[in-house]
Length: 248
Image 1 (cartoon, rainbow, N blue to C red):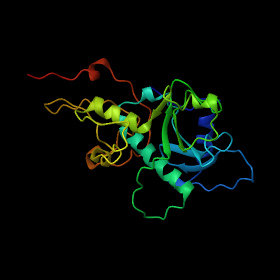
Image 2: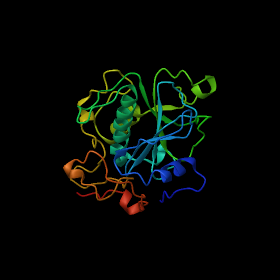
Image 3: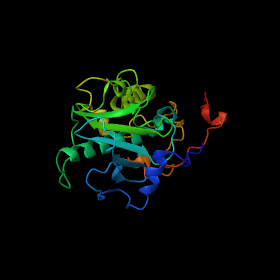
Image 4: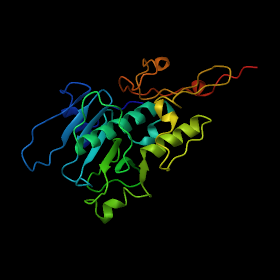
């Protein structure tokens, strides 16, 4: 399955304009006062993050993190892509924190902030940012004082998929760990200290059945890379590869 850029896609256009920036680096572009152009904040091999200035849902800050590949939806992801979701959560937390106060270099990992809302809109899209076929995460600082009644439907319980819940539910489906989601005491869970937890699957006799994911197939999972080095188009599994070998 290929995730090539789609002509006319606004997210693909934003990703394309950021390709000249150094990888793994923040962006500090200069914009005229009052400009509503997307303010690019970060680009790496996997994601492009920008500050939504035309139609933010919060006056304190609204950031969009787009996949560099034209991935259509969260339902394209598999458990193999868990490190990417963990990376989105970490990146969003750092960028939102930087909007509140500058973060010194070399500082300790940031702790979750109850004001930070990070996730995806699913059934309903944001009417002001109507991109439904290029996967992107929204991260904003509560309260959402600029959202309005109609837009709130996309960010409400009917359509909002918090990234913490998505990560927890994928891990519960792929492992025997019962991970509480939707609780205030869930973020400090020890399993969150292992970004790749739940990303691999296999049988009791050691046969690995992990599906190919968006992450680079050359990523060294054994050494516990915190983030995949790059996104690469997913290849479709053949029926034979989807069925694990049964040994007696």
